[in-house]
Length: 180
Image 1 (cartoon, rainbow, N blue to C red):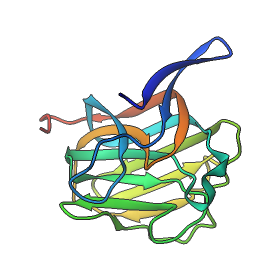
Image 2: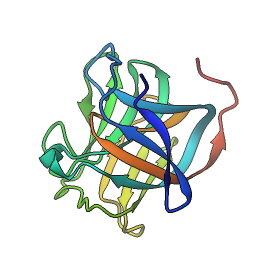
Image 3: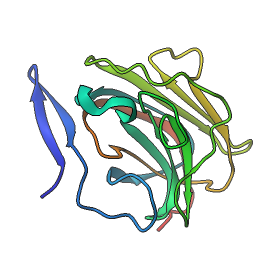
Image 4: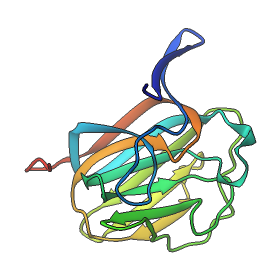
């Protein structure tokens, strides 16, 4: 049974993830991912409203955004965890092996509340820049730099938590060749 549902909140339909899926990735990485496969981009800006609905999850309370997917074991993602550690609240690359943290700056964690939050990822291929914003769209909460995957679709999800996504907006350059 899918952990993804269309839910109605205040007469508005949202995409809901209800927890950890049964999917077992080939390497250590998130379990619940919804890929938007027809949107293969290079440089992009992805903005989405997100609501984590699992306040009892503790320090790893999270939602994630994904990009640059080549296949099930090659992509990037940001884990927006409540408390930072090597496996939470970091930008990661999954490159044929278990996730590897590539975050360049320390963050104090993601200040999840039960409210809706605005999340943005900016990606520039030429210099490999990755910037992640949470509510404050002026100063990135996390940054990284990596040029491994130059194109791919984007996605939303979680490692193993619950949440809602709405108002997804993708701006960017469409890739000339579609990735597998």
